[in-house]
Length: 294
Image (cartoon, rainbow, N blue to C red):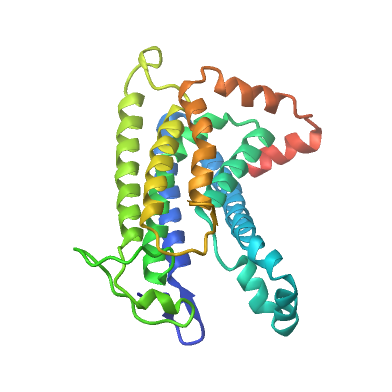
């Protein structure tokens, strides 16, 4: 467990560092192969920046939502806490991130870019899809280092005994299942399989391709939604919240399954977003900014 790297003048959170490294590598690789798929390299960079902004906002907002029930249930206590230590109270509300919120935020950010700058959404989606689990895998290794998102009590092979820390004192009480590392491994495997599928499909002539635009994203979502539903059973932390016997992440997984199926089955998914982008009013300022931003 290594939550921070001590630089003397500051402590650098290892989770953030590992995720940024994963995201940067994924973006470099996407930009490198994007040209061979006919995608403008500037669009790859700028759309990813929009996505990263959406990712940060979405991950924080959903984390805040998971905290709301406790805040509402202990409102007067929280108000006193907020008055006594405002920064610590804000850290309690926004100090973590939820993957599903980040994923949804990233997709909305890329969608915003594609609509505003008239870039085909599913060209970007198909390119980014194999790298989403790649960057996520680095993030889960960061979770392991930080001691967050930890597993259930476990005494079998590969059990991990975390050292004591004040933020999560219960973490060190018993050996834990390394669920973060298992999820990282599953993400890296998923990334490799998706890259293979994308490369194999791209080698064929356009009329011979069986994999249609957006289906790769649907395959990834279906894979991860099912995997995450079962991985949640191995999670030992309760911070992400529960509704009945289901965790918040399991509920989100179930709700997103129809969307994954839509991406796999719908034949006119590209037209839906293309029509939406064409309906956006095109002003001289918009056209000018489009040329500059790219």
